[in-house]
Image 1 (spheres, rainbow, N blue to C red):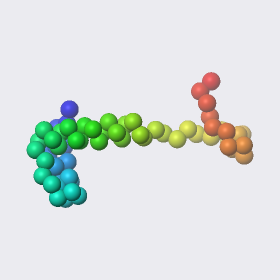
Image 2: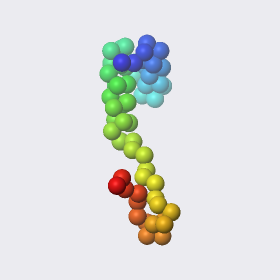
Image 3: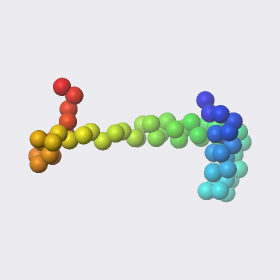
Length: 62
């Protein structure tokens, strides 16, 4: 759930970027979709062990 302030800010940013006004419900839906996309795409980069640095091996959870 997005706050009224978040919806209003999203509407302003959307209008500035795309020149199109959104209703509160459209902005809420698009805002939630954007958040879900970012959550799906963004993953932290695993740290590399100091000993394995020259081999390029990544740290695993063992």
